[in-house]
Length: 168
Image (cartoon, rainbow, N blue to C red; front, side, top):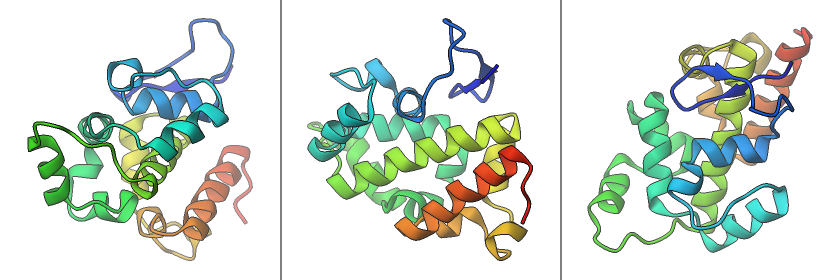
């Protein structure tokens, strides 16, 4: 049975027993219906939301639920936003949506943390894994590779290899 990640770090099966796809898991990590006006069930719906810009409160929800984002410059590496910019978003009376680039990176990070949680067993383990050098990534830390599309793909591919027991 495929398990899904919850923001709290626990791994729980989906109510229907069917596996959730990456789109739905990312949507949940970003706050789901609590932070977004529209539901997202497909990659095309995710695309439309990302192009419009995900709400700032979705990023705030992600940072609150994924504690590693609040440490050092992890938020900047993963999503391209400094802690100071995040604080400005939080303090702003009228929270503007994130840019398309920031939205895309936040979404991809949510997908990666969900996938890593599935592979590592808990969100806590997944967050720790992001900060440790990985042999399959040339002894680079996964978090350091998330600043580019190619690096992000390398991290996703590495997680898939780990999931299937291929350690090359």
